[in-house]
Amino acid sequence: MAHVTGVQYEPVAEIGGGAYGTVYKARDLESGQFVALKSVRVQTDQNGLPVSTVREVALLKRLEQFDHPNVVRLMDVCATQRSDQETKVTLVFEHVDQDLKTYLEKAPAPGLSPGRIQDLMRQLLCGVSFLHSNRVLHRDLKPENILVTSQGQVKLADFGLARIYSCHMALTPVVVTLWYRPPEVLLQSSYATPVDIWSTGCIFAEMFRRKPLFCGESEVDQLGKLFEVIGLPPEDEWPTDVTLSRKHFPPLLPRPITDFVPEINEQGAQLLLKMLTFDPLKRISALNALEHPYFQDEETLT
Amino acid sequence: MTLQDKLTTAAATGNTADVEALLREGAQVNGVNRFGRTALQVMMMGSTPVAQLLLERRADPNVTDRSTGTTPLHDAARTGFLDTARLLVQFRADPQATDNNNCRPIDLARENGHVEVVDFLQSQ
Image (cartoon, rainbow over all chains, first blue to last red):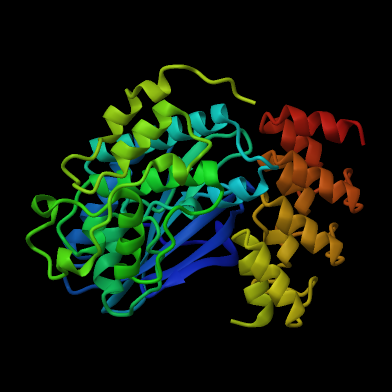
């Protein structure tokens, strides 16, 4: 990551921003293709870049060597020294010009076919499983960063950046959506790979509904909304390391998931419930989800 | 961010409601952002709702990129979004336009294996 950003990548529009830096849609002047430039400002000292940043970038580059079909390509990494104290690290990712949000919005009534949903879900879980097997959490899966090519290929974006950004994000609160967040994150308990499975479950439901499953306006509101569907968990599943008490919520019983996702088939409903499981230790893994009977009968793609 | 910058950001992220609201607020459909690009040039190519809205509001479909000479139809063809390519042509994008490498949209579609787009552009 030694070379300096030349004129190879020309920004054409800002597509994301936050406390940590800015994301641009840019054109690679060599290939003519669009790319996504993600910059992060990093504090430096006489030893250069912080070890944590170098380690994260090395991890992303290692992932890249697998050339996995369901994650976006990391095409380049550039570091530009801005001053003695600050270096700008720019990650150049493949840009796919359609996200799942748009893909769902575009689908004519009555929505995506069961076969299309099964195919999207298989690819999505393959991508998540790949990240998890390399000990990378996505942490912020949502329809906006699940990309779908014109050929229907799913590619996950925005993974593995959380730790590079985290120290910067603490400085300025960034508005992020709560809708795909699992209960353990909402409760500020410890978390690991099951976070991404919860988000994937929410997205699975959304593929049928074409609107989000849980639309909370605050952490507590979001928890209340998800208990209305999965029921209030038993006392022994409530994490012990959190401040918010279980007594804060009404004693709701689980409701049939098909009340909320009526178009889903029986196997799909079973899988969805295994993903939307309160206890992260009991939640299904990406690898096991791919083995679920829901994926056994190939539905016709239309 | 200026109104034009906001419009191009909304278009590039496929946010139809924001594009609509910004146009209502007075953003110019053919105005350029701080990078010298219009909304149609940077839109999320797969977002037919954004493409439709911009074109209905008279976005110029034959605007060329100042660095590469490509038109929106070149980008739709290269990325393989048939519905967007159809819309652009319907609103009089020139299928024979050539970029700085002397490529037409159909050449880029062919190069990237987008058969349906090739067939469509051939029929034009």
